[in-house]
Image (cartoon, rainbow, N blue to C red; front, side, top):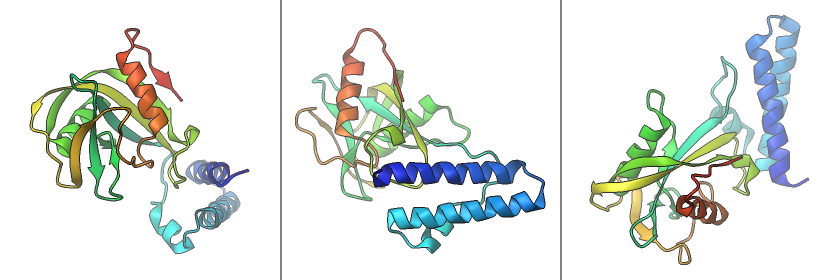
Amino acid sequence: MDALEQLNLIKRIKALAEIGLVYTENGYDIERYEELKEISHKLMATVANTPLSTIDEFFIPVKDYPTPKVDVRGFVLNDNDEILMAKESVDGKWTIPGGWADIGSSPSEIAVKEIEEETGLKAEVVRILAVYDKQAHPHPPEPYYIYKLIFLCSATGGELRPGFDMLDANYFDLDHLPELSQDRILLSQLKQLFHLAKSPNSEVYFD
């Protein structure tokens, strides 16, 4: 079993402990679930090679049923079939525009907002391309369990420029991509998204 598989199992243990804490009213069970959650944090710190204090501080105490976080991204092609990308300031690598889902905004609204904020371009959503379970793809390990919603979008105006928290923004040919921010997007996903975007069948990939 590799580190990613171990981390996913630990996340599942943590989620089960948190579900128990939300629903149990038995004092003994609360102690057991708290201990199980503490064990999951220790295991996660070991697998991720991260101090336990960092892991503890990373997670907000759960008061409701734990669910995956949602990452929303826009896939934009220009007239030359080049892919719109932004350069992350966090790691200096490139991804398609996107970010965490915001409460109060629909997924399509988030995709449009992120495109404009990160690249300066106004856009509209055409259709959804994919719903990825991030843990089912070879991204680097991380504590959260994440679903990724990818929308095909069309640029409608604006000026291509990097957002305040981005280093650059540009279009790239699929065969000549820059170094990718693999926390956010993978080459295999970009190839699949390109195929889905060009397909006349409106196919949607999931999982």
